[in-house]
Image (cartoon, rainbow, N blue to C red; front, side, top):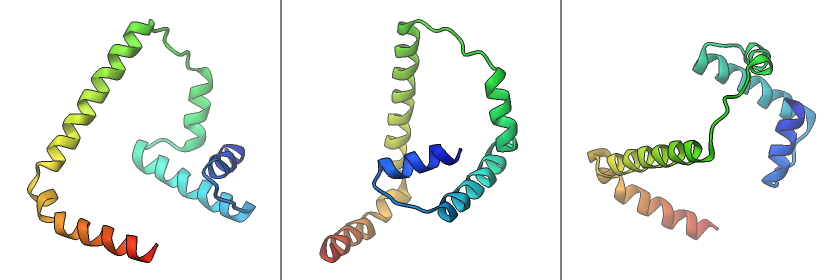
Length: 102
């Protein structure tokens, strides 16, 4: 896990020391447990023995397209929500402040 975290941070240009990685790893374990109810090590142990299903390319593309459509619908629902529309002025102001500070 350590190498994965280090490579991920390096890939986006973030340098970190061993303490940073250990802290991130600890947080990641807590999140995994909270979200899935499964301890991270248990998850990795199960993944080692699980065989990946064999899917045809057309199945993969079909599933990907369905997921994209699902996510696009979620985005559309969010953008059409009252809270999104009410927060629009704040997002505009926030963007302008960030641009001024950059």
